[in-house]
Image 1 (cartoon, rainbow, N blue to C red):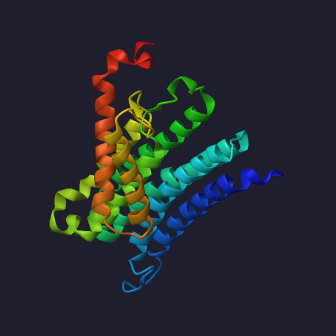
Image 2 (cartoon, rainbow, N blue to C red):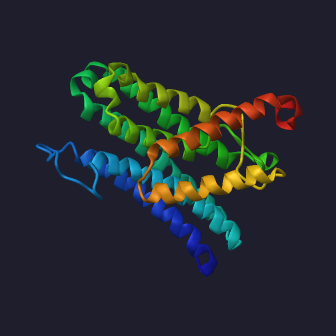
Length: 261
């Protein structure tokens, strides 16, 4: 930290870590005795504000990586700090938020399905920790253009925005089958995080149209994410990127050296 160029990327990482903690605290505090259901935070129900905070963590996580490259400030300390922040923001906070949101929506159902909720929470959080540990321990230089498995950043964002949409459209209250959506989602995302599937990283492409679409997607994601607007659009971006990216790599499986090892 003697060199000032390291301050900015680590500042973004620190904010990521703090917002992840705040998301957990805000979500849990809603269940204090006699909560005021009319209490609002940033104009929204605290549980939803906490989910938006996890979304902000996604955006900040990308900024710290960009800042590290821009200022040539990559370091071993920064990598370890980033992993610890990611574990809180995208491992623990989304799992806890999903667990407590289901308790908020339907306490009777949640108590009756407690083993299911605990197993899904555990699988997700454990897989996130395993992915981050694997990333730190293994040399992944051969994957400069690809993620090996789903990044915990995107997994956390997917859970957070799903909670926002479930509440916005009252899906669990209107369609009881959606009780199982979050537990199933946690397990699927957990499996994808530690899977051997490849996902292309966002970067400059030969196709100019694709480059424009990437820029528009990133810019709109930051604008709508920080302003807490259009969660349906944000989720659609994650779905298109995830499904399209994994699908592309599977189609091109024979051409990717990693799959040949």
